[in-house]
Image (cartoon, rainbow, N blue to C red; front, top):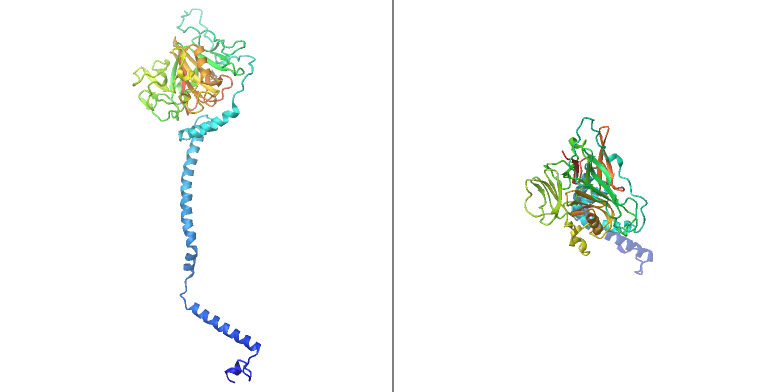
Length: 434
């Protein structure tokens, strides 16, 4: 047969439908075969080359993703290391206090201030209220007078004149408010007295503790903390020394962190921050004396042991300073919560006779604190630390060879053992005068 017969061509030259479909299939098969041949003629790629081509966009993303993760991990590791060190450091500070202090040391004071302001909106002290009775000062903290033998000659040791009872600042009457109670003794003489007083006419349900100390019977040492002011090489330890634990009478808190104190810390030639002329200064002498004054400038003299500054004076010349009476002034009292908030505060001051006053308690703003210092007879006074985590006065007794702390005033929150272990912050130790 010829070509026409093979393709199903009829004698009349036409083709059937079946034959036409078969022709199309043959042509399509031949075309596909040619295309396959053409494709096979292209260069072949290996499996690794095909994988590299497929993975090329993913590799670029992986490159940047790994670097972004690395940039995030480095600060995360530093933060973990740093905050863990703060939380596991020696001392008795609460977790909240440690975190707040860590934040202030790392330029996050604004965040702490914001948190404290928000917290204050929910924890403001209530106004009004009554006090049923004035607490009795812990009798166990008063050292008994020695009993001289019949043949002994009793010599009266020098003492300061006991202060008169305080006149209450709040209206109304509470039995024994402002009446001094013996706190502890030295050589049979009362070396410290304490009392309670309501802070003002608004917060009449709260009591503030006031302590009077006789500088003729007690001496003072300022102990630097290992974080405030920090560093080493100080002449005094960051806790009550073992050699003095059997004789320590009391301790009380110092001022703000050095970041917020607006002043310096100087001890026998070693210094953290420059002493600021005009800054409120607690000055402890080599003789164990304690003075409060506006720093006159210059380098401390050879008779000075320690200078600790904190803000500005609140009482000077027996009167409230303009920074206190001017309600618009807040920056002088620290960025924490300023002067208007009614919170736990503390202060130290001196009277004309050199005796020392310490105050700590709740529900005080800067004005009410200053008024209490003035009412206690202070001619010069300065604010110390604020907030319940840091304000306290602690007395000590010896019980079977164990030094036991007693907290004052009632309601003070810091751990009473805080200065019997390494302290994060500086504090003042009160010891018997030789």
